[in-house]
Amino acid sequence: MELFWKASAAVLLTVVLVLALQKREISLLLVLAVCCMTAAAAMSYLEPVVDLLRELEDMMQMDQGMLSTLMKAAGIGLVAEIGSLICSDGGSGSLGKTLQLLGAAGILFLSVPLFQSLLNLIREILGQV
Image 1: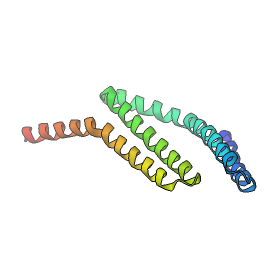
Image 2: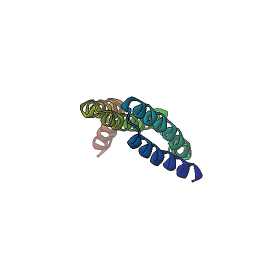
Image 3: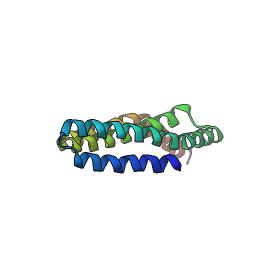
Image 4: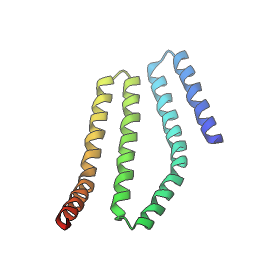
């Protein structure tokens, strides 16, 4: 949890510095740097979650692609959200909303094989009843 507190302090300090700085370009670069640092800290917290999901995948004998697809979808969602917030901070709210739309479309695109598997399972169940 020490990493969480350090990253939180860095984020709050960055907010104060951005408010104090008059140059918008420097502020944006500072925000981007701290966002990258915070994302790296978040990744260290996600490693045990990924390990648990892999263990569950082995227990349930799931298709290897399903977990990979779920992790990619989560990654797309996080990147789209963070990118959207950065765009909004940079004064381009419409670009941020467009990035969120792109992220949602990407997640839906990745989900097509999962929906097809679900549809096949439903067909099997209905065919057996």
